[in-house]
Length: 626
Ligand SMILES: Nc1ncnc2c1ncn2[C@@H]1O[C@H](COP(=O)(O)OP(=O)(O)OP(=O)(O)O)[C@@H](O)[C@H]1O
Ligand SMILES: [Mg+2]
Image (tube, rainbow, N blue to C red; front, side):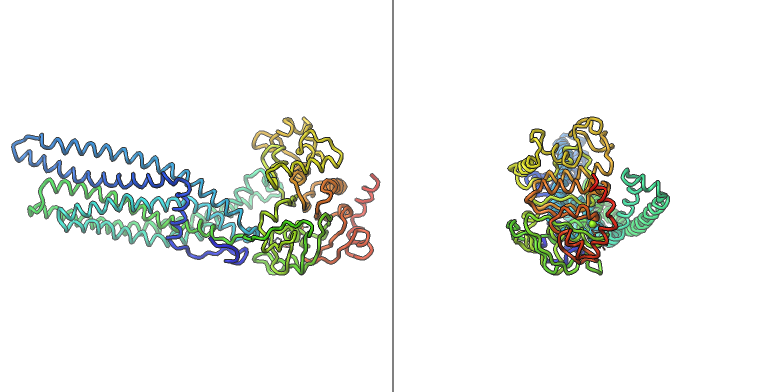
């Protein structure tokens, strides 16, 4: 796997992945998922192949003994032993077949789980900025498809070696023994089919590259039309018709590409099948000629004819699989490409809390963007300080927050968090003890309690809970009802209110799962409670409060800061009433920090800030009245 620095951040490489790497990746997944079964299934597969080979030998022996019995006056007892052996072998063959199929289903199910686990683990190690790249979503879509393909690929690859190859080698030996010319039979079936499958590879790879972005668009329009989240807005704003039109367009485009790829594949298959039929005719001719010339006995003729039929069927099946090798290789590459994405890496530990956060001439440009979103920012945030970041839409506030938490790393300049450069720090130490609530927070379709306590604790000792409990105690609350209740109460949500939450904290927050739905403002409060619940040394509030009125926002922010007393807090807001509670305010415009200072100081020194404050002043007058 590539480590840090092998590709530019945010770029998704599209290089060709060698076949052996794709196979090895799938092979390793299977080996990890089912180490013992994986070996057993190969042994069963070889045994299964050999039963096919030996059945041909026994068939010939049976025919020969019947022919011998007829020639010697009709005593068929000599034929009974080969017949009995043949029956036992055929029975064993069917048993092995059933066992093989059963083991396959287990291999796929366990291998699938391991492949998902591998992909999820990789996702956790990725540099988060990769997600800002639009290519990434296509790549993710393709990776998910490739996940099962890579397992098929290994399965087929191995089956070719453990089943088809032993069988074909056995048959080659057998046919050669009867008459060397019959070896041609194998070539007549083999060559055209193999050639056709190679041609099909290119078709499938091209189709996948074309189809993935369209499939993603199609899924988006489908969800805009049908999902509960977008449905109301879509209908009310009249975008419904347009989305249906666009959805159908993507379906048409997808089906056109599918149709074209399938037409090409079928044409290739058809031409190759014609060659094979000609070859099959040729072999029949040779066989009949050998019989008429007395080169082979009638018994050998019957056995070879029967075995050739079987060989033809099995070879077709094998090359059907070879065809899917090509297809699965094309798609399986996407899985390996995903695993090759640059990882975040970093070994330094960001643990020296006393050193706060230091930004030195920091700039950041999103992948694919032309202008930096944060431009030459320098700022020092002391440990335990509360900083408000204010500015208009698009000023760069959220981007700044992503940089100073270490989520994104600067394109130039340096961010040092708790003593470690974010370019060198490991994610675990960077994010341990960080809590946050963001503009685009998640509404989990889980219970009220789970919505609050879903946050991973910084350690498993319960320290976070204890910390939260203690902080709440500091705020003067009793500590008996559990930290979820207090976190919720701090943001004005009463989990015990039976009218809103019939099952208390256990109430499911989802209509889809027979629960209740919340208003936009209530959801925001629950999200804030979640941020509060997680034990933290640094907390970031990036405007999760759009649906909460300015006075209430200010109150919630204040509660948050009080509870987080002694911790570093960064609060992003448009509303300067909330900014007032901070020790210092950083004013952003056009990606730059244009002023930093205490609220009162900025009112005097920063016209931009003073003007923003004046235009919002009626809210604060109201607040001051209350
Ligand atoms: N993923 C992205 N790719 C490219 N540009 C982006 C991306 N996200 C944000 N930007 C751009 O970066 C700039 C700053 O965005 P940011 O979200 O940091 O602003 P903000 O101050 O938080 O705005 P708001 O108050 O609306 O939340 C904007 O011009 C925005 O268009
Ligand atoms: Mg923002």
